[in-house]
Length: 507
Picture 1 (tube, rainbow, N blue to C red):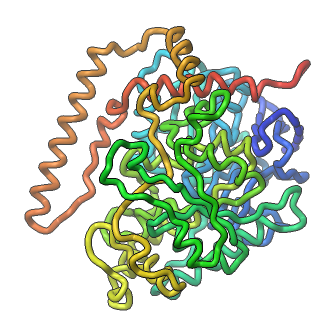
Picture 2 (picture 1 turned 30 degrees about the vertical axis):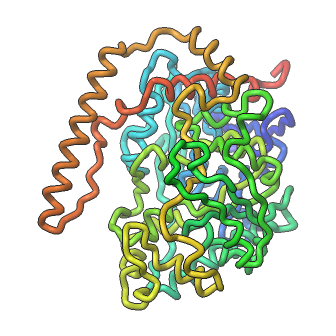
């Protein structure tokens, strides 16, 4: 294989798209100005090993995406987390792989099927099924369009495209072992991101709230160069209409850790010019739109995130065996910032995902006698991050007493869009073809989903009577549960971003 990298300054700075035409031994990569290129690889991201060798594809912890020539083929690497997927388009003419869904569609001359009524529901069903699922296709007008998370893909002309698992870190023996490996992973990745040999160096930034996960990671990362954080000063009460929601401002925790903190508001995007929701809406459910208020903080940053802490650090048995099965539409959070991330120019670093295969071992550590003093009981009980924070000097009453805010906002209604986006979205929807599934059929499918949910709720109740608490979710009918609005929002977002990936004039 021969690699030909073509930088285009008009592209989002971290975006790349690779194309292999049928019968060709040449891979052509169009990419933005901040993508790292070498004779045999292109990538954007950081990993828990030295930067110079460029071995991101074999690292247990990798934030970002890339490709490297390997043998007679090429290895495409997604992030170790769910935040940075790979998008693949296959047709008789070419194989196209990109870190942007819109870029892949534009390069392949394709588009999402505008008459399909369940794009958002398909995304939810994929999240519930996890990374080992069989069905990966996204409905488009031509070819086969797919989404792959937390895996490597290897392609060669003889055997086509094959999926490969990421390397897994060693299983921890106890609390000290787990925290030592986690701190090593954070330190190595932050050092990699700031390496002077890079085209651009990335400084650490963390989100912080009054919950457990982000704050605990910040307590570990502050010793390795992470000296700034941001927090959402408004709680969910301000924008959800629920007065019972407590504020989620993590400023006091950041100060207790000796870290500078900047406050932002979740709803700031509503006052932005242009169509600020479009680049988040391109991937369901668009809930990372709250990050638009942090755009000025994020350029050339590696953003430390506590995603997956809900599964890894809970004492409830919800995590499984590394398939990264999510439990709701909220599990897609992080990935809907993809187009925003590529344009703004930052890495989304969620180190807890790398421990997915060790989740049950870590949950046993959470319930071990050595963590008893840091267990407060109840559903929101996480002894591991509590011990990390309390030993770092954060008062017990300052965090983790109950679930408060969240770093996302579900776009569930047209009124959740800013005025300019609302007008443009409504004009766009008026021009869409009628959905292939009628309103009556969609209502019947939704009723079927509700019946499955009710049946599983009864099964959970019966199992609980004998002390068994299975994680039963309505996976079979999940794709029918999301409203048509979310699918229309996805179609609108992808359509509005196509121009940014158009080939250069004369190309």
